[in-house]
Amino acid sequence: MSLIDKLKWRYATKKYDATKVVPNEKVERIVEAIRLAASSSGLQPYELFVITNKEIREKIRVAANNQPQIVDCSHVVVFAAWDNYTADRINANFDMTENIRNLRTEAGAAYRQMLVKNFPAREAEFNFHHAAKQAYIGLGTGLIAAAEDEVDATPMEGFNPAAVDEILNLKEKGLRSCVIMALGYRNADEDWLSKVAKVRNPSEKFIHWMK
Image (tube, rainbow, N blue to C red; front, top):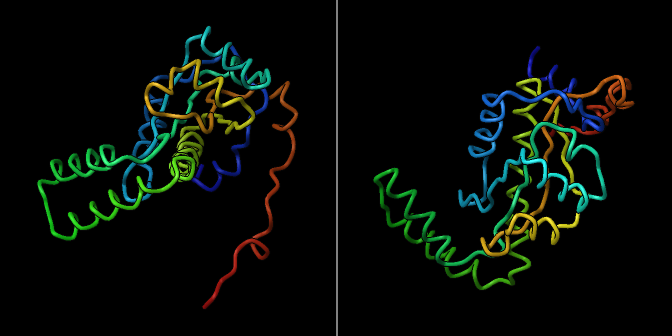
């Protein structure tokens, strides 16, 4: 199938086949696609927690309003955004970039200083939400990558972030959970959504060409 065909095939799976496991190489490709996703200023202000441990997933299920996908899917991916932008975090990112590229420019130094001056001065909650938006870019990339590999995926928000943060010890890492992605294979016989048409706004309503 073409990429468009695979995007037509994918949907937010409601019922997974708990007996099927996504091969490691496919999971690795999906999370690598997320790692390579775009982010504001290239700061990549979030981290991934890929969970197969049954005890941890059961705790997350409770924190996620008992949604069955958490325990029935193959892998649970928790996106955890920075709780704040700090000078140390911004400088570490720029140091890494300069070392990898072996390139230092006046423009790059000026941009670094602008971020160091402006980002930490903002409210921490504002910065967390900005970082979380970057995680959602990664989520979208991950959903597309999963479809490309014909792996079912479900983006999930219906959970208690504070509880998940505690389960994964995120606070001590300076992180906060913001969204979850379940990966696995659909149980088509028990998932009503697998049998109905995909619904999106028609192109003529959704896309506006301005020539």
